[in-house]
Figure (cartoon, rainbow, N blue to C red):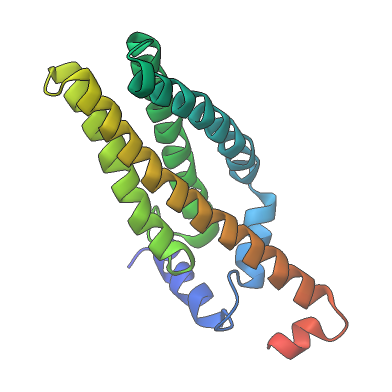
Length: 177
C-alpha cells in the first residue's frame, strides 16, 4: 500500500461521521493552490454553461446559430475537462486519492456520467454520428447532468462551511470529537 493511500485511510478513520474533512485534510485543502484553481474554474465553467445553454436553446427554438451552439458545447466540454483534471489533482492532494475519496464519492460517480455525456457529444460531433438537432439534445442531456452534479458540489461546499462553523463555535471541536 502506498504511503499516500495509507495516510488517506488513516484520515478517513479520524473523520467524525458527519465531518467532511479531518483537521489534516482541511489543512491540506486550505494550503493547496489547487483549491484556488477549483474556486476560479467552477464559476467560469458555470458562466460558459449559461452562455452555451442559451445558444443551444436558441438553435433548438429557431434553427439559427448551429455553429455557435456547437462551438459553445465544445468550449463547455473543454472547461469541464479542465475542472475534472484539476479537481482530481486537488482530491489527490487533500485526500490522497485521485478520485472517489469517501467524502466526495457520489459526486465523483456522477461526475463520470457528466464526463461521459460531454465526451459522447464530442465523439458524435467529430464523427458526424448525429444530426445537428440530435447533437443539441445530447448537449442538453449532458447539461442536465452537469446541473445536478454542480448542485452536489454546492451542497458539499455548504456542508464544509457548516462543519467549519461548528468547529469554530465554543466547544465545537470538542463536541465533534
